[in-house]
Image (cartoon, rainbow, N blue to C red; front, side):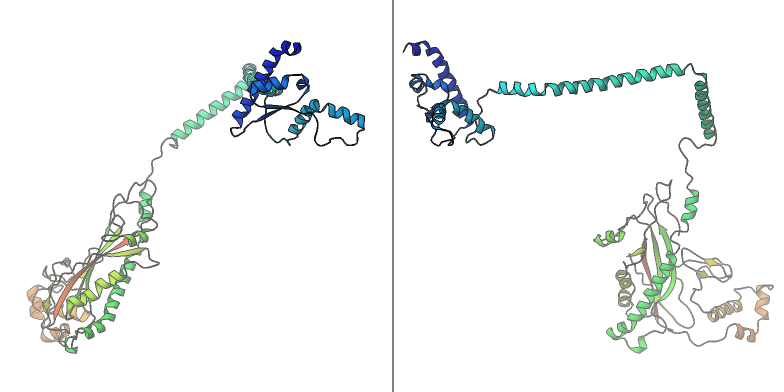
Length: 466
């Protein structure tokens, strides 16, 4: 009892430490429920300790008296008795060994974090020392190298051979720079695009071949549809005119390009397909073709709608071609009736030729042959045969409208006899389609080209005639 009274402060401290350990464990394991305390070690040999801890902690306190399963079976009775007597002391060592090899049932570390941290830093002190040494060495080399280079330069300043070599290099560099400035190879270069523009004149020269091929295909398609049209519209054989369905009176072209247009996109066909209405590529370069055609066909409005515009619509986009067609057809019906040997007068849209024999009036692709001294409102179309041209010329000579070379107008009129007139202007059979109504249409479409890349040094395209 006196021993217990003397050691009460020690028991109190022990009880407080045990209480803090229990609280720490429960903070780490919220679901743990501690109901009893098992004492290990020689401390629990003290009498009255179990009773005191039970009162202070409020739970049952047990003490390990012996092992339930023998650990050592080959020991003698005397040694086995000594081992079992030291079971309480040996349990702590066995518990630490099991926890060290990772076979413990519960994971608990009651060592304070500060102690664990200090232990870890103590092990790393030597590595920190080595890293600091390497850093100091690298810093010393960085500071030492410029100093050594400065000393080498100071030593070289006194070397006349080295200074002479440096002066020669600087002098040569200055000389080369001066020569380059005189040759105007320094500074911003000035690009002359004239050569590129001249080469650009050769681009898309085959456009006229494409236009002629399309016109030929268009007229051939109309001829192919002529028979079906006659049958479907109940046209009698007497109403069917002689000759081709359509006759080309003139073809005019005009090249157009947007000044801000550089190059057409690679997928300009897909861009045209996706366009719902209107011009599929409004900024692309194009050739605007205006063609005047005439026909004697009855039901000409229906025949026109069934042939030329339909062909343009069906052939707007074709595989393997570098262009596509966009039709903006405008139809102008100009009917005239053919009687006798007269030909219809020129329409308001036809080009007037110059009053010179054999001269040519041209705008784009249009072409006319003119006779000397003719009236300004009269012209001979390209499609006229040589016999017709000679007959009309003879008639005008007989009327005194044309002077024969080397004679005055009166002399030429007086010297021409009947035989000469018969030779120059024989009386031919009546012209075909006499008395029929001739209708002229104006067909307009655009050939949209895939433009090449803009030449170097040019910011945009330039419009011009193709």
